[in-house]
Length: 181
Image (cartoon, rainbow, N blue to C red; front, side, top):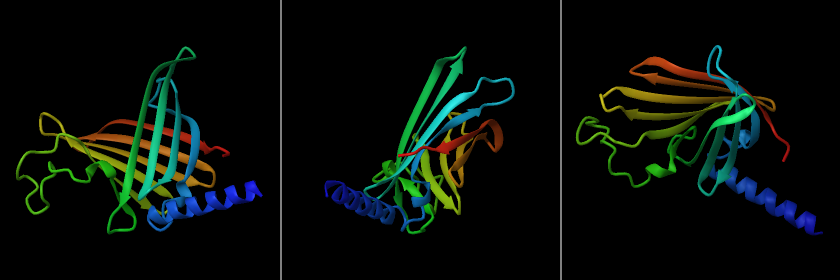
C-alpha cells in the first residue's frame, strides 16, 4: 500500500515537473548519465556525469567533470543551473537572470555597461539539449561556450565547444549512458 502511494506521488510530481519544464519537451532528457570524454589528442580522459531533472518552474542541469592523471582525480569541476520557461517552448533562460539589471535592452544592445556575468540559456531541438553561455572578455571579445547533449536511446553524446571571437579555442566530446534510478 505504502509503495503504491509513494509511486503515485512520485508520478504526479514528475508529471508536474515535466509540465513546468516546457510541457514535456525537456522530459525525455530527465535522468542521470555517466561516462567519459576527451579534451583533445594526447590529453588524459575525463570522467563525466550529468543529472537533468524537473524543478519548480522549469528544469535543472547539474554536471561534473573529473580530470584523471595517473589513475587519480587531478581536477574536478561542477556546475548546476536552473532554467525557466520563456514564451518560446523550446527556449529556456537561466533562473539567475530573473531580475538582472545589467543586461542591455534589445533595441540598443551597446547602451549602458556590458554585463559582467555570462548570459545563459538553453534550447531543445528534437533530441538535442544545448546550453549556451555568452560573456564579453576584458578586451571586448565575444566568449561563447556551447554544451550540446544529444540523446540516442539511453546514450548521450556530449559536444562542448568554446569560441573566442568566433574562433573555436577548446572542445571536448564525450559519451555517457543513462543510469538506472
